[in-house]
Length: 253
Length: 237
Image 1 (cartoon, rainbow over the protein chains, first blue to last red):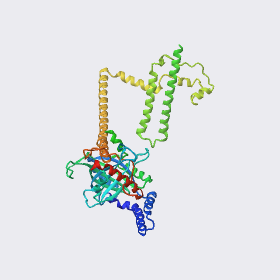
Image 2: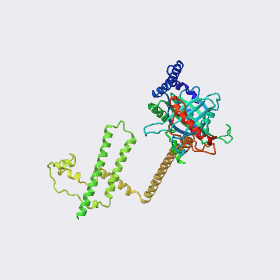
Image 3: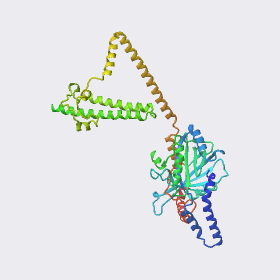
Image 4: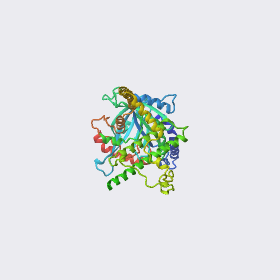
């Protein structure tokens, strides 16, 4: 699903990638083997890697989903070719990392998400890390969280289990992907995996589509949050996209 | 006696206030009529009338108030009439009454209505007394019926309009907050999505970003992950 985005990410990745190819050349010429680290840390410092996700979430009930679909088709790019549909399976692995000198109870874990496209088995798989969402002040229009995406091969599941990750949960998403400039809007229906663990035994979690509006950018570009807010206003009476803190939702029930 | 005097003073103060408000609103209405007659719309005109009617209402309430002594039992008696201009009077009346003289006193202290108004009222009274009582009763009944009918029509239309507004609001509900929370909790935390019987709740850990890039930092994370893996192995495998 992310591979529709290589066009936008390319501009950033190219800068980063040229740095890498330069360092490979240097390493080949054996001038300075430590420069790999230098190159990448300078890339990180110069703030060109899009590792922050600006996010707004909401939902729309199935009966009004068609209306929202049409509105998004009108508002977003590439109206002629129609929106892309996706059918993905996402698995979340957690890795417990005990802090040095800490007791086993103080183990901290973080989540890694592995996503594969069920409708295009030949696409690479995606490994994604999502940081803690920061809601910020009232005047911060979007949720901000760090987000790192990596393309990988299908044996990533084996790799992660070898590392010691445990699968926490998994679900299937089916929906539509729209793009506007650098922003990405997804309307997805979340399905629970059935007991038989086959794609046929799916049951929808709720009668609504989850709508997410997100943008990946290097950190510090807060002006894009305003772009997102403006776009969210245009979807206003149909779906209310807002900052939702899912950590608080955990404590509710 | 003194208490009554105080009451009277208070009542007069209140009356004066209300009358001043009424005067200002009438003045604004006249001003608008004179200057903005081209741009005036009927609803805004009705609004000004509503203001005036409200103020008259409060005025009447003040007069009917228990604390107000019966004004009907009191009379205003001019004590001194002089044609000389009186400065205090001028200020009190905003320059309208310059002197409390003989010609304006009858107008100012008049209790009867205007002569033409009085005449019209007399005419009406004459006509009313000429009508025999049965026809009068019948006419009263007919009037009551018509007025009630009109009132019913208006209340029905109002209810219909209000219903329309609420139905539109109800039909427009396109998102259910409970669903939003369920979906986001599911995607973010894995709530209700447990696949394993040993389900530890998923806790997004503190931001240790590097799962991929930054080989400068990879060395340290690889070390820690290897450590973690070796520790957790016996339980996972």
